[in-house]
Each structure stands twice: as C-alpha cells, then as structure tokens.
Image (cartoon, rainbow, N blue to C red):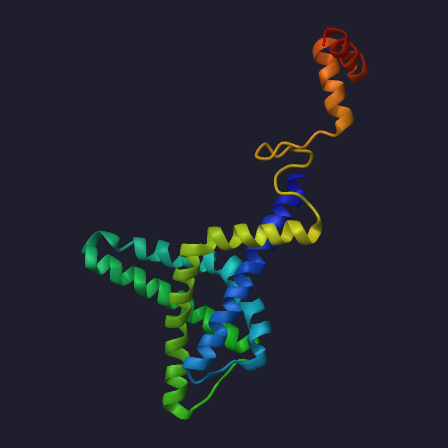
Length: 195
C-alpha cells in the first residue's frame, strides 16, 4: 500500500507540473523569439523531469557555493544572490530544454539574446505561481488520479466518516432487534395488543 501511495504521489506531482510547464512553455513561445509550437509537449516532459530531479541538486550545489561568502553580504546583497541563483538554475534548465527538444530560438542576434534571457525570467515567474498553488493543484490532480484508477483517497478499507452509509431496511430491522430483542413482526403484534 505504501508503495502505491508513493507512486501515486510521484505521478500526480509529475503530471500536474507537466501540465503547468506546458502552459508556461506556450506562453514563452508567444512572448519571446523562442519557437515552441508542438514541441511544447516533449519540452514539457523534459523540463518537468529536470525540475523534479535535477533542479534540487543544482540548487543545493549553488547554495552551498554561495554560503561560503554569505558572511560578507548585506541583506540586500543576499536577496540579489538568491535571485541570481534562481535565474542561473532557470537559465540552465531552459538551455537543456532547448538542446534536448524541438524548441528553437529565432530572430537573429537580438532574437537569440532575448530568446535565451527572457524565457528563464518567465519560467521563474511561472514556478513562483506554481509554488503558491501546488498543494491545491496536486490535491485536485490526486482526486482525478483516484477517479481514473478507481481507487479511493486514503487507505484501503477506510470508512468515510463525513457521510455515514445509509443502512438497508434489513440492517435497520436487525439493529432494532438487537436493541430490544423483538423482530418487526413481534413489535407490531405488541403494538396491536396495547392499542
């Protein structure tokens, strides 16, 4: 059970981030000289894999390198270093996405400059938005996953305490019999004798 929950978590995280990255890539293709088009699907898969598995390692390496000189920086300097680390990571992910997919950069020299500088900024904005809403997105995607696989949220065999099951007439009669020891027929007969 633990293994399937873990797999579900990874699938939900990957798919929800994939959909979000495809939307961001289409926006990049619309606002910059980058040509995304139909390559958005494969580029989204590559970018999502990079964000989930490579980005944390690169970010850890950059942060450990920056921490060596953290003592000599002001608060504003620290914020600037944080921004440059985030931009450098987005830039590297963008370069890898362009290299490994059908995304291309057009528009001559200035188009190439803007095609490599502007998309990482858009990626940073997109990831900030996703970071703010990821719990809700992944919760909704998890519900869709459960519906698609026919499984229920939570552990197997768990009872939903929010809505108790409606008992069948036979079960209700059995419950009444347990309470006073009389069947429905015996109860009717006593009611007729008494009334």
